[in-house]
Image (cartoon, rainbow, N blue to C red; front, side, top):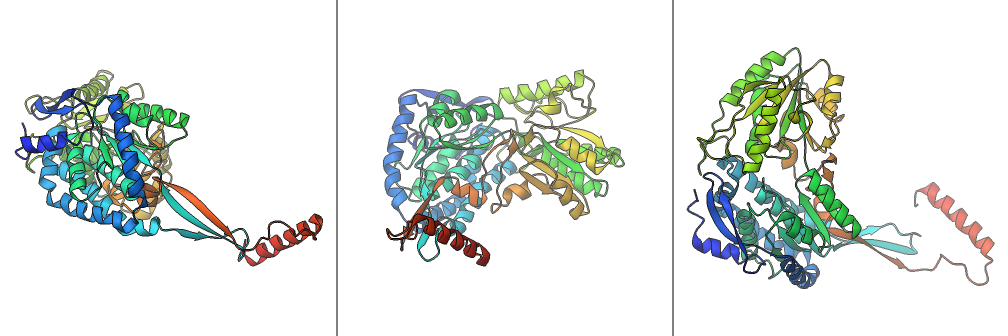
Length: 515
């Protein structure tokens, strides 16, 4: 099941963007399980070639003024929105997600690009800093690009998480070597084509494809900074490898995200919002809600409303906007979801709705599933399912709700629903997660591109979005200029007298607020 926009001509152009030899592999058309595209497969030597080309191109790009660099991204932003249907087609073909989720995905790079078009000139501009001795020594902070940034992007949001990370890396003056997931390379490759059509200099953005541990590992072992989105297990390995080279990294990893439903909510409205927070992208979202804690006074009413809303979701394979949910992306994802649900059912959990695969719709479809009576001995209790499965739990008071929500090693995203928003926000501030959404599942915080987004605990290091999402791709450099030498005494001044003078000066400067 291949979209009409994926022509042979487009495929040839996308293949040409990959640094690779003669080896190839075939990706899967997720809706049907058949073949989607044959793509080049890179070797370790190709990663080194890509790095060398990117290094040469970066020297001129890093010396280009910020506003001249931004002109490329102004054109890219227009091209992205103009070609949104092709982007959505490619995302759907290789992931199996619904058209609605595909459109939401392509909005991320558009929002990120627009944000840094507005803010990068100020964020990257030299900044005057207080010197050691006012009037005698001045200091300036400058931002230098890291060099060549390696980005290893995942399969669940292949376009958003590749382009959303590489755009600020390029804006900051770096070159990029991108290693997308092999199954979902078409949409990021199309994004690369749009960037080059927008005027990105030749060789500045390189793409390599292949086995994650081998080719992704070569990117990690080669580049000057690493951006990674994926599992906690792989992120830990990347951090270790980067640390051995004293190379920085930014890691957005897994989550077991909680939602708190307080006793003052509007039940019907909250249930509808919770469905989106749990089942967007068929639950294959790092920010997706997998645990819902409901005040025991409204537990039964909420569960009934939530199950009813879940039952209204329409699953389908298609390139139109008719489906609410699409497919899981792989047999591996389907296997994990099935194992978690089957294990919970066998150990006494109650399946309130869903709980089975849907091969009649496509090879990897699984029904949105709501569980109750989940206990710590079940796989889905603490481990990330990463699929359309959520568990409901009652709580007695606010303190218990916070304790239950924080009872995890993850700390990526959380949600609090309550009519008293001040109370809900106060509870949210007690949760150990990088983002908290009040009366929403995930989109409010993630879409606020002026605010940082990332995880605590084993959910990652670093942040995307906001000032940090750009500045992490730079090195801070201080240039200090001494106008008058006040740091060493003249030959005719005894050093003991000089130290008394300096101590007195430091006291005075502290008293009047100069230092």
